[in-house]
Length: 406
Image 1: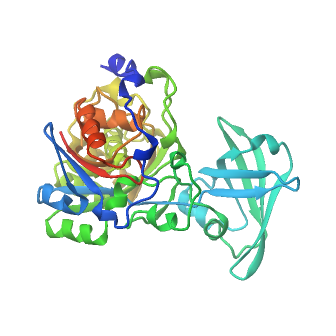
Image 2: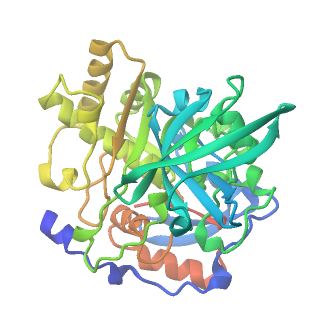
């Protein structure tokens, strides 16, 4: 099984996507986007606000409540060169919540645009914030893998790093939109239920939901829960190897509260996932529980799920028993939430453990997200994408939605 999955050729997951089919902006009303319906091999369509009527009453729907941060900071050198520092993940402190509360100094792993022009020295940016003048200084500490470790310092202990990002940071919209970030993106590139700061890309399946649709879900007897996966820039990383064995998946940080785990158990370990990020978190939970059944004293770091773990281990434990293992771990350690990370790759050959229905947008050709969808619909992705292309669906982050029921 694992060898078959590892030898998947990414070229088999290509399809023609003309630039004009990529939605550059969202439609005026989020919930008026088109909704492709795939159920047991049959394809049809409706409008997104009708989603609740296609879902079984009493089901559990899981949302990713991450909030996109204004992760791009521009500095101009005295020479006039423009340097972009793109925040990827916190380095010191590593905890997202603590990071945004820091005052005076913090460090991040970053991508740096125009790096060749920043050989040495510090970058400075002066601005006004809360009626006070402030100087933000960036110092490149070292190269770390494909990223740069950058230390930020500022001369006002009353100002948090969250305040700084809100003032000078720019929202990092996807590179394939081929346009500058606009003021409107600050609202339209966040889900209406976003809460926990940390993503550099939106969990875009959630962009279609409105308060009206959420109320309608409640009225239809759909149980709702939230978890957090902070979406990294690696979500846009193209697969450059011919076979996926040589593609290294990016690590993303997850947080799941005890109440969500308890709710999953009450729903027999079954859920409707909103977006691929919720999928990756939920399916990682299963393998975390399996790990804990063997190594109950594992630390937070040791619960990290590696890329090929599902294929190497092939466990038989039920989803409910796996989730119970996580709850026992929380009990033993006096914790209210599970915090760890995942590098899981979901591709054809993968057997889903928890996710039974999926709401998702249309993904880029030859992407790991398309592999995830293919695995979910038992290889039937072509039928879905051919229909979407033939029926004027809009693609990618600001595009239309689909409900997939294998």
